[in-house]
Image (cartoon, rainbow, N blue to C red):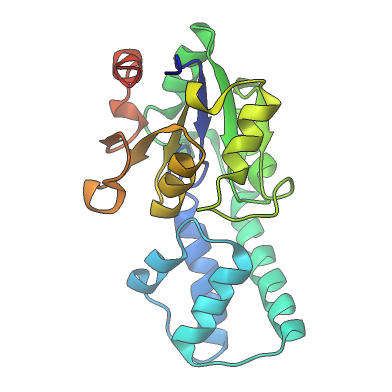
Length: 218
């Protein structure tokens, strides 16, 4: 039985809500291809890699493209998305996230980021949060997408921690599955109906406390 000393955070939907910018960028791409992409459709893209997201989008629109055309579209979507995140301000940090990170840091916890995003460093720098992380594992360091636990296991490895001593904070079902597959505890951020497999589900980090974290040891 591990003793929790490490917290690993997903980025999108946990520390910052970049989902709206992803959605705007995907919707623009769909409209350009001649079909609509709704917020309901967008749920399917949560926690999913860029190319898989594009394939889901094309499937919704009934569009078939070559791999080369797909690469160009994925790049176009990312450039559009980056125009939004390059304007992000620290006030876009989700409620309670910064104070919870600071509290963990002050108590001597190790903190890692475990995100599929290749833009993670840009976002953390814009939010002025980079200094709170001891390790940053993002889309540039991993080859497997969640629910594969690679991103979280690399975080534990980089911090010299055993997976059983780690708690993962995730807002996507695939992320919760990845944490459990990696032998870690998991706190779901969002609704219990989607994240029911997590050890604890809260609305956001504003509801997290040191006491709730310690209770996961039991």
